[in-house]
Length: 328
Ligand SMILES: NC(=O)c1ccc[n+]([C@@H]2O[C@H](COP(=O)([O-])OP(=O)(O)OC[C@H]3O[C@@H](n4cnc5c(N)ncnc54)[C@H](OP(=O)(O)O)[C@@H]3O)[C@@H](O)[C@H]2O)c1
Image 1 (cartoon, rainbow, N blue to C red):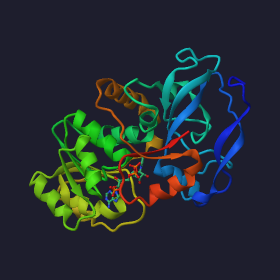
Image 2: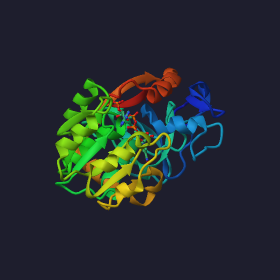
Image 3: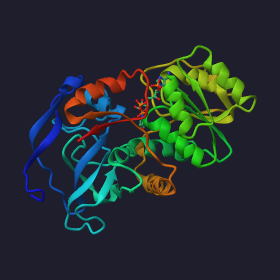
Image 4: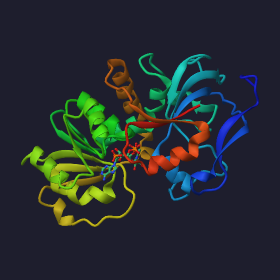
């Protein structure tokens, strides 16, 4: 074994259920990298809402049990498979594609889903790139066809995907409006690309957005909570405007006629469908790191031992302030 150890700490899920099914074990076998894979010593792992849905068993994706959650890690290369030439032991890297799970001391990933971690970013920031930034890029450009000069509303801008969307949209020349549920969240959104912020917990905030965006309206809405906002989003759009459904946690009633007068589109976004266009996302995002505008904002941090608490608080947040990460 490359590390000189055969076992490690890892969170294991042996049955679907609440946060309590996340068990930290200390005798999990170290994964072995295959020919085109690398073994990463994990330093930080992003916690994404989808990991809570999968853990609960309510998601379409159900991994075979037992499994280790987590896809977005940053760390140091520990060992490489026989065919891997682009990385060597000791390289700082991040990935959004762990194979054996990221809530662990070590994880394996296919080398082509692993990227060098710039000196400009620490491990926590590296772990905050994966799902949030790839999703934000896909929603804005690959599905939403946003263009420089257009106006985007990031509806739920204070969390992982929202801050990513604000940074990317600003860098690409859009006019950026963002919402958060707290003053502190609004300030973070303002410092990360938004020209103007609104509080989505304040009565009448939609009217304020309407007033601010004027008769032209909003070209693209990146929606984090469609089951609450979709009906009012349709009132905010410009002619030909698009609502991108990134997040939704339940049903909502809308009036389909509301899409007719402005020929509005409601478009679903799923990173799971993005396999063929990942290269474009990767290139754009790595250029953003190099240029300096891609700077993940790290929010709550928890040690691996507190993983159940982390899952509970991610879903019952009193106000997001950036991306939640586990420290390994
Ligand atoms: N489709 C995909 O491929 C994909 C990929 C990644 C994520 N997602 C989904 O996208 C959503 C956001 O993910 P995330 O990682 O950014 O989660 P997160 O870090 O937990 O952030 C959640 C965001 O939702 C905001 N929010 C809360 N109430 C809201 C409301 N009434 N209206 C609008 N926004 C509201 C929060 O704002 P405050 O806390 O400030 O109130 C926060 O900005 C989740 O539902 C997630 O499952 C989907």
